[in-house]
Amino acid sequence: MSNESVNYFGFWGKADNGNNYHPAVCHMLDVGIVARELLLAQPPQLQNRLLSLFEPVGENGLAFIAALHDIGKISPGFQMKREDLCQQLIELGYDFPRYSEPKHGKVAACCLPDILREMMKCQEGTACIFSQVLAAHHGAFLGYPEIIPDKEVWKKARRAIVRFLAEMFQVASLDKAPLPSSSDALLFAGLLTVADWLGSSEQHFPFAGTDTIDVSAYIGDREVRAKGLIRELRMDSVLVNRKTFDQLFPFHPNPCQKVSQNSLSSFKL
Image (tube, rainbow, N blue to C red; front, top):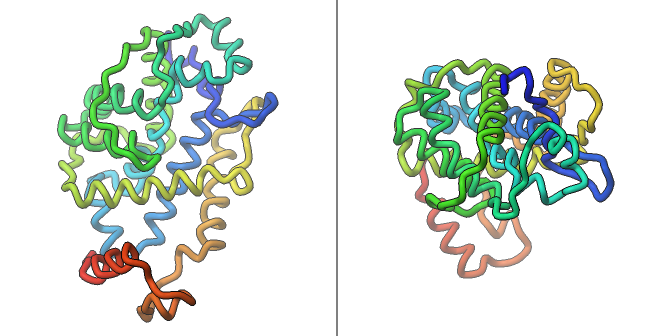
């Protein structure tokens, strides 16, 4: 199967109760674009820490890696959650074994290290850390789960989509990306989780549907939507004066909030 034979938009990522769905690759583009805009809205010190993880490709490297968070949805276990949306894939020769792993985070944790090493020339340690962060975008680090491998047709589809996303974000290689520290990896994990949350808003990022997609126009539209959403939420605002918890909220902090407050007060970017 060549890249040209893979319909990048034929795998659903989000769907309503009917036949309307948002292709997985479109959601991946959405989240990559939102992650880049979130990065650019951060204070310079935090921007620089995050950008240092993706030298020398910078913000595009961060956007590309963030976009890969849902690569595990290109798998039989996830796709068969909506059997009514699988018919075209079945006709194209994709198999759907009943033993397939249904959790896309686990699939990502298993497949991404090899993809990042072999396709993007990542160092082994860097590839493993990026993979763990991406697989944890729903808030839980999964370690290195063991799953029954998918057949070659699915592996080729995932790699074709990774190559497509690399082209869209103009990233040829990550061979110089350094090994992230634990704290920097967690910073990126936090940004990714917020980007996925924002990029999942159907109000701001409506389903692309099954019609032919003009990729350049789609990306331009999503960039405008991402900038607008971040402005709407005032996530691009600069905090000039610090405020105490009691100034922000009409109630006193509970014990957990006090611990968090004390920890954050000593945190430096």
